[in-house]
Length: 312
Image 1 (cartoon, one colour):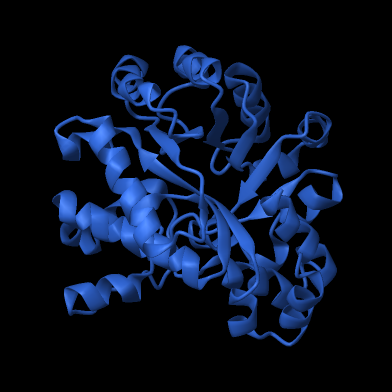
Image 2 (cartoon, one colour):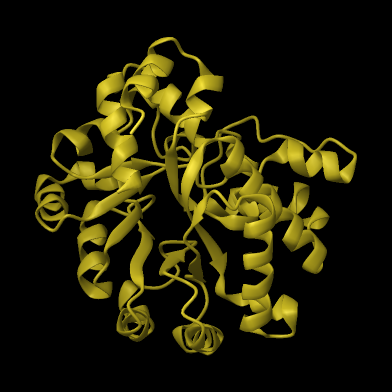
């Protein structure tokens, strides 16, 4: 699918052409997944950009809380943020979008999962019907399992969400604390993901995959530090949904040209390229692919393999 055009676009460093070629975004945090210029046009004002590297999720959250969240309060703000995310995907050629909606967001609609789902369906159909939107529920790792289950269960009557993700501070609680939550998700046929190996070590990746029976890992870049963990991921066909600019801006890699995605790929691990938080890091999927090509991490042909990984 579009292999020749994708390779040509990379080789000519033609971002406009890259944006026209089908791709996926499998690691996208909904309200942070939009285009900042789109939000600014709605607000009628320019917002600050994150221009320097930071070192923690807490530091990122401080920036978001100060410079972005005050402008997307309540239902109207939430819906504009989701609209911006759909428009970002549409204009970037993303035809497969696994976008994570925090399980708590139903409380914007008087606790109604049904009303939240209606809104998501409406926004999808209005702004990006051509995008294969695969909705995902996100769990904040700082919240207790009991409360997350309480927030989660009302969604299960609707068969709308297709996957779950555990995100936030990797060290907030051990993976074992969420085992029952993930067993419920698995029993409903949901794909199981979790953020791990972004800040934590390689052993923590394998442990989390085994405890929560994960299908995919969000980030997982520290697996590169352990040959046995890389072998485990390859052997069990665990896909890593990697976000290069996010990893760099959060100081998880010192230089883009040394990003571990190369070594993970060389060890037979299935990897994809994604955005994480476009509002914060400012790169769409097309920019991410071009970044990896310009830094000579992959050839254009190899990046096409990675592009197709995400579309499978």
